[in-house]
Length: 405
Length: 139
Image (cartoon, rainbow over all chains, first blue to last red; front, side, top):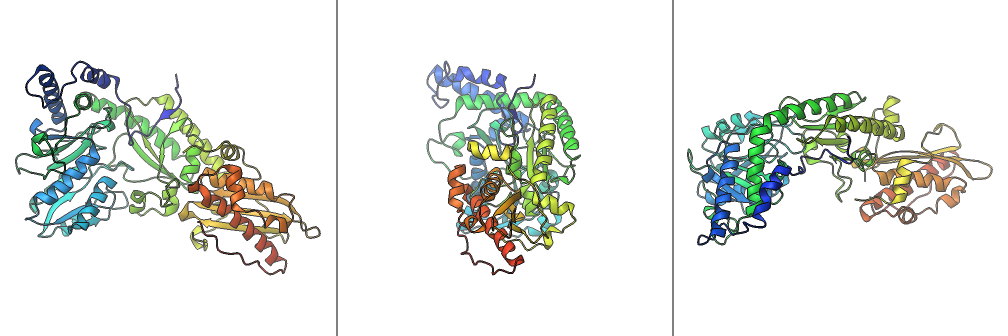
């Protein structure tokens, strides 16, 4: 049975797995204690639950539980990781290398650091969204302290070569931070095999609750430290003060455990559905996949439909299908996605893109419905598009002097 | 963002989508906007030389639902008006009719610009001087 609306915006957030909710419920009601209360059973129960969740989370990424710092989410973990290293290693240097396609939580954190007097290199990416390793190595300077490259991109799903990146960093004695938000729980991530020193990730992108995330901080080879960005009771070994979100953390742990068990089968199933969706949509004339199709998350596809505007396209079916577009028509800036632009896409293609993010719960019926719905809408809007008509008449759209506004 | 009923109706059942013969002397064509901004509108009017009345209007628009609705509405309003009357169509009346939110006002401005551009194209083709319009403020 097909239930509408269909949710295909899982890079934005995932629904919670009912098994996660089930694990969390007792910690709202019976076991409501503060995990920092050391002197009574309420505190003990909460602490035990947090310890168990910490193990579940650590296990998913091949870390030691002591290396997990719980935060309010990935944005906070990005801030703590990047700013925390910048402050802690100030005597070593002040240069950070990142990329133009990073999430705003990293880009804007780096901009903040620049205001504080830090130096940041924003690497361009290749047309497929991948980092150029030669350019990365060339950007390292004596004062470089950190390389911050996301594991997988939120808009196009491109998976970065973390092992190669960390090998270069190691060689030059530079730390590696990665925003693992989209990758953890979806593809195998192992902080030791991948050579990651710090990593941000969050529960709500992997069927867990919103409002809880983590920063992985390596404890040996090398031992990494971050300066706390939140002062207070000294929770999380002094790196992140604030009463722990016990039910959230329990849910995060359960979500990690489920991903550990089901990641492989989830990925096999979603990639099959994603491939079906992509192949069908590429049957539409002048449609293109954005970003690498080889190094890509199994459940993600970003596709542009030339000469049709993304928001107008969404309107054709957004009552029934939840999706995102790279068109920023809704924003005041009118600027399309900076990630797509960083790939070298023209504004026209960037405005014409849709981002598909499948999940554990996506069904084949939903994909079939989506294929039909989007195909119909694209064809209908092209009939209304002056650009499509000009393209069909063989007019070079670049030769027209548009009244820029 | 929720769209108004009227925007949805124009989007789903756009009025006057199509193309008039742009080489014809009694057709005026206005092409405004730019692909990189995410909006391109082409609005055409067919004018009866004798009466100065707009006998037909067509549009094609690349853009969001509000841009499509603004141009669809504009073509409806243009039909049956004289060219002089058409000049009085103001973007704010489009905003009011369609209940456009502030971030979509530029769509109505674009429609107004398209009307003016179509009229000027018609005037130029028929040996009349182009009307100089003040630059639109919001784009």
